[in-house]
Image (cartoon, rainbow, N blue to C red; front, side, top):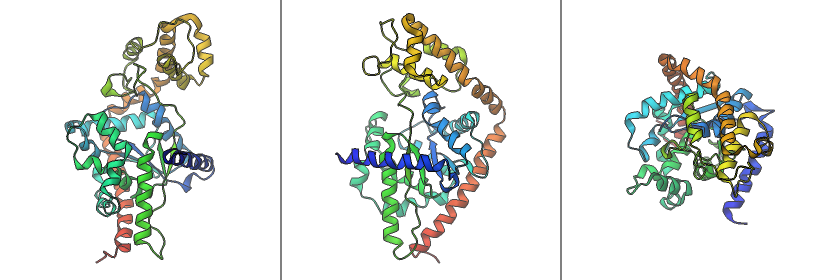
Length: 357
């Protein structure tokens, strides 16, 4: 068994145990999750992560939803849109069913300076070689097409460790491709505790990955992960007519008999899976129902299912877009609570590192 596979299998086993326990003891955990404000969210985000965040928060799990605005600077030049994109993310979160309150906060990490002060001690706990080997960083550099890579990109996993550990997050919902970041965070937490907390209680918990059960959602071209930058996504804010037009252009194949065959018919399988995510029906049953209807019938069924599913969210989006003061209040309230947690953690860190004055 390879090291990467054993790491995944171990994470999967821990994830299953957490999922079972979290139903009974939701307050025992703290979820840290979030997005970079590089644009509005699409249906891949909705089915892949947003629905799960809503589920966890409604179970009563304390949840910190981070808008990683600093991290946009590592591989994007469009900093002029960060503020606008941040507010649009909040609108998407709220419209999907996230309810900010005592146990659920939404905030940009540039507004939590106490947390960012953890970067320096954390950077002393990892080597340049460990950062360079991180497979997720390599993939992000490649996907962004960067020819000149700034140091911020290499320290990205350490910044994510800061985001998770400042609030003593114990659960991080991720897909398999994000596991290296969680493993780096666990490494930093372990090294910090071993170095600075000898003969005393450790400062940081060992966060665990809560692995997504949703299959990877491909774009409408059927060959790449759904992404706004690739032009293969349906945004949550799209109108019903825009959604219909985008689905009409989705790639299928020439076989009129619709079957679920991910290996040989990935484009058709992806559209069937999206219908299943909307309706809860089994993919093979959907395929059998469409039968010889071909790609046209498949696309019509997906259009109807997706627009029906997203209609309440889109109506709520319109209402929230008319309330900019409320959106700003959600962010500022979240930042205030995040800063309180970060200040407490920073004081603990100073104490164990003998830096108190």
